[in-house]
Length: 120
Image 1 (tube, rainbow, N blue to C red):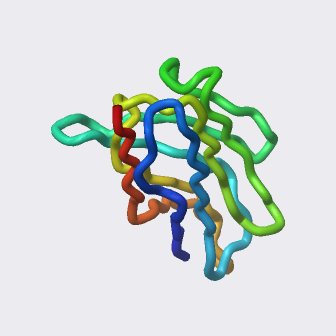
Image 2 (cartoon, rainbow, N blue to C red):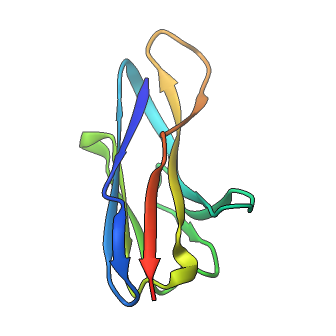
């Protein structure tokens, strides 16, 4: 099972970016999916979380600006980021709690990270 992210880049303050993360491999089901971010010298923090039932949660810093969504048919989670600020600059990581085929357990998987840089 792998998670592949895309969509990061350089954007001016006030701009928008859309991140994508697709899960692939022998997957029976996916439970939660979400995004975290890590700025240089700081810990990795939750940005947005989505359960398989459609419940979403956001960090206070993301509320009103970021939207998480999922395409369950494509095993993909998105993060639409609007009104970006320089303090949003970080490496963004997607994660997913996945039940692989032929396994009774669930595991947490992480993407490789994608850089988002917001210039002032």
